[in-house]
Image (cartoon, rainbow, N blue to C red; front, side, top):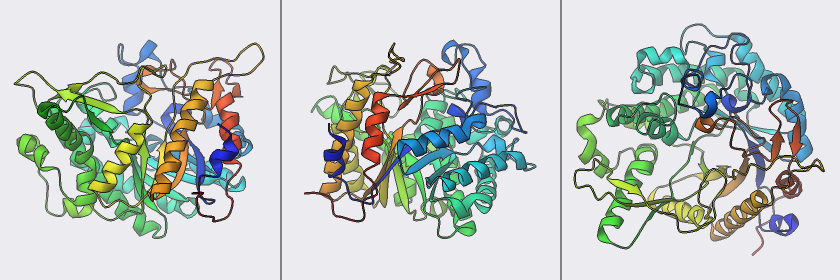
Length: 458
């Protein structure tokens, strides 16, 4: 797809950016006062992460940040979404502040400003300070208050130079994937732990919104969700009911408190005995109005009713994919899932303006003999999903920007270094960066912006 023709379908002030996360790229896990996060511990346990890969070096971004910001500048993208590592700022989660950790983000943000790159910071992208696990991690109310203090500190120091801030990235992952399915750190498999982690994560979001507004009242604050595009396997009554339960559990557990001030009825009916005490004022704190929200979308979620009559809530199983096309991580490719979830969420909740904060595809092509990385399938994936985004804008949905995941190949959580999502190839032995074919295409698209405020082409 011609990037210029695609660009003509977006508003002139639409923001095109790239995204990363601290633990996935920084390395330097033991430098300048940083202490371990739950992901350092999890990575070093046998059987948790592929090949026992860890984040000790990753993309060495902690030492190569200037080169990486130059790369963003060269790509011509307007904005950079990155996350701040809590264990760099407060190595024990609470206790003394680590100035050297904050200094790194000071330099990074100043480096962005010097290059004319907008800064979208995320306060939490899964690297909880390991010391907080002694109190129960996210299953402890005290962690929400520790997060509030961390948010105050970060924003008082950095907020004057940020263009936007998100409290959390994908709480579904740090709650459900981490406490119910056991796939991510800390690797729990327990519904009660999941519900405690959900409530205290939601509370931490609300407390952080208060902290951010106190320190930087004009800074746009939001939260990033990998909302599930829940699609029933069939029209049967059982599968349709399962899809409603799945929606309440996977989306409603987070969207309900933040945008309606309440958990979904089905969740409360099924799980109230397992829920933590919801104290007076909690829901008011959680449901404060925010300025924007981020949507991370990769693949739809297809569900069927669990045939086991004793299956616990939400009593659904994964249904088979509809499309044979998959990325190298095994995820079904279906851009209609993006339209589906956007329409569904805007119909269900009073949502503010939105950024697509992550979208991208895993393809593991290496550097060819000609020095190029021909990742045409990734380019096609981007073109397809951006085309859907343009259609949604034309329908009137308030999208303000799009961040490609990811700037570069990196540590892909439980998959270690086996899965590559980058627009830029990273040779982990030499740390050489090579812009892929998709990266060159995305660069051409991004360089069309900003164009001044014109209406999207009809």
